[in-house]
Length: 158
Image (tube, rainbow, N blue to C red; front, side, top):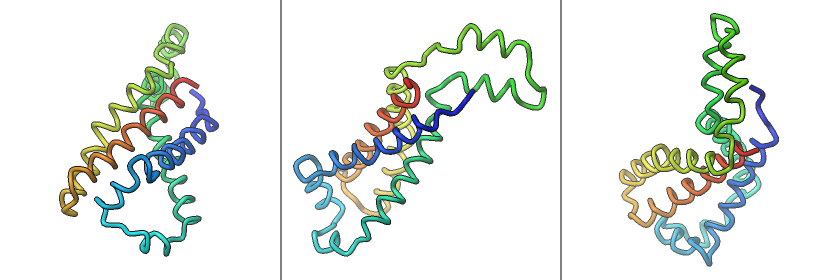
């Protein structure tokens, strides 16, 4: 299995694009700022270049970790290319299933599931201990559920 680094990069960039829309003042931006206790004053002192570069790096790492969740053939690849070497059954399996479940829809489905079952519990737990509101949890986890769905679609379908 070859890694499609262009799809990974596009998926990572999609996180920034979705974030630009999601956290726009006319969408959830104002509500998020209130829920996060962030003011315009606090926003002005940020190093935005550093924030966006780090966000892109983090999104790239996330896209890499989503790849085996949405591309099921990677599981067969990791089993067959292990300590036993390449088994003849691997070639037969890949001949039959190399393109099965490799659609945007399937990737989006698994990306959304990852958002619900991974991102939501992590963000929700942190927010509870930070004494943040339900709105805060829903806005931030909603962003990641949508973003991971889009990332999964790009990675699986491309």
